[in-house]
Image (tube, rainbow, N blue to C red; front, top):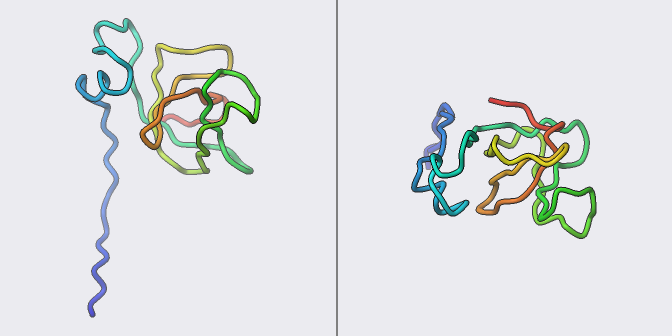
Length: 102
């Protein structure tokens, strides 16, 4: 059987208004100045936690994002060191000190 793998280039695209409605309950215009942008996890050890609350507690972790993983953050929703994010079909908070904008 032939090797069916193909080279591809990852293209980063912002979410559409319909996708935003599905994720966060409203259009981009209705939510103000923020926008969804692509970021990459930039931790040097372990993982970046997606959390239900903007606090550093193990109990509120809902997903683990590993180094190099690309996901989206919403620039209009920030709480201290935390920013609102969308990853793996879930929304929550991530520590913005450990992300790199694409």
